[in-house]
Structures are given as C-alpha cells and as structure tokens.
Amino acid sequence: MTLGTILLVILILMLIGAIPTWPHSREWGYFPSGILGTVVLILLILMLLGRI
Image (tube, rainbow, N blue to C red):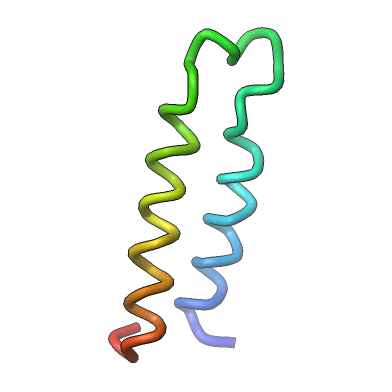
C-alpha cells in the first residue's frame, strides 16, 4: 500500500467519526465533517491524477 492510500483510509475513518451524532457534538454542526470531507475529496482527486 502506498502512503496516499493509507492516508485516505485514515481520513475516511475520521470523516465517519466526525458526523455529529453524539450529544456533545450536535452543536458543532457539520463543520468538522465538512472540512474532513474536503480534504478527502482533494486527496482522492490527487490520487486519480497520479500526484500522490
């Protein structure tokens, strides 16, 4: 596995964990998962283009 693939898997797991379903994180809204989703999307595009 390449470093990019490992990083993508870790970021996807963080994205799932950032979904505001817990009582203490409901007031955060979708801000944490939105940021992680953007990072995952950028890394996915870079992987498809062969940059990573």
